[in-house]
Amino acid sequence: MSIVPRIAASLPRAALPRVFRVPTTLVRGYRATPCFLQAGGGGGARPEPGSSIVRGRPEEETPDRRPVEAPQDTFTSLNVYEDIPPPGSAIDTIVHNGFVFSNGVRFYDGSGALLVDNEIFKWRPTERGSEVERKALKTGILELGPDVWGMLDVVNPKPGACPVQLLIVGTGRKTLLLSKQDRNQLTELGIRMDVMDTTHAAAQYNLLATERSPNEIAAALLVDGFGSTE
Image 1 (tube, rainbow, N blue to C red):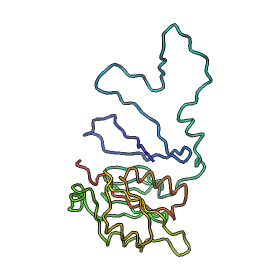
Image 2 (image 1 turned 45 degrees about the vertical axis):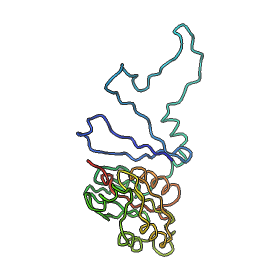
Image 3 (image 1 turned 30 degrees about the horizontal axis):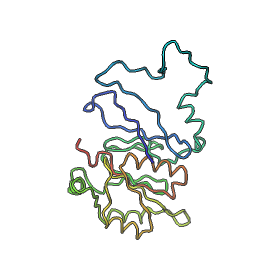
Image 4 (image 1 turned 180 degrees about the vertical axis):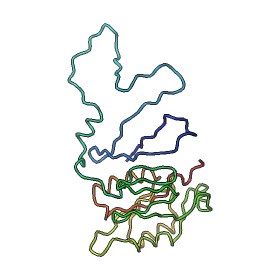
C-alpha cells in the first residue's frame, strides 16, 4: 500500500522543519490525500489550483458534461470510516524529533513512541548518532537488542483484552531491516511484525487501529530524524 504524506514545501529546505501530517482519509480501505503542485524554478507559468486545461483545437466545441465533484468531496463521500473516531493513540503529526497524537499528547525530545493497547509510551531504544544508528545506515540492518522488546511484556494488554496481533515498526527516515535477533524475540512473544519507515508506519497504524482495534495493533516508532543526515 502506498501512503504519500503531504509535505510542506513552501520554504527552502534549510529553513523549514520536516513536518508530516499523517493521512486520515480512507477510500475503500485505502488512505488518500489531496495532491498539491509546487511551482518550480524553470519553464512557463503553471495553472492555478482548480483551473482546467482543455486539449484540442480552439474552434472545437466541448460537449456538455455532468458536473464533476471536487476530488476531496469524492474522497469524503467514499470514506467508509467517516463516522468512526480514530483512537486516542493515532498519530496526527510527525516532526524531525517527535510526534503529536490525536489525544493532544506531544513530545519533541527525540524519543520514539511505543503504542500498545491505545496507550502512548515514550520509547528510546537508541540515540541519534549512536553506534546502532551508524551501523544501521552502513548495513541497512537495525539491531536494537533484547532489552528493548522486553518492554512489550510490561505493557502488554491486561488479561481479558485482545492480544497484540501485529506490531508495526517504524525505523526512522529510511526503511531498515530488523536484525535476526530482534525478529526472533518478537516471534517468541507471538507477535507478527511489519517493518517500514516511520512516516508510512504511522499511517499504517492509524489505518489498522481504526479498522480493527488499537488493542490488536501496536506500533514501535523511532523518530523521523533517526537515520537522516540532517
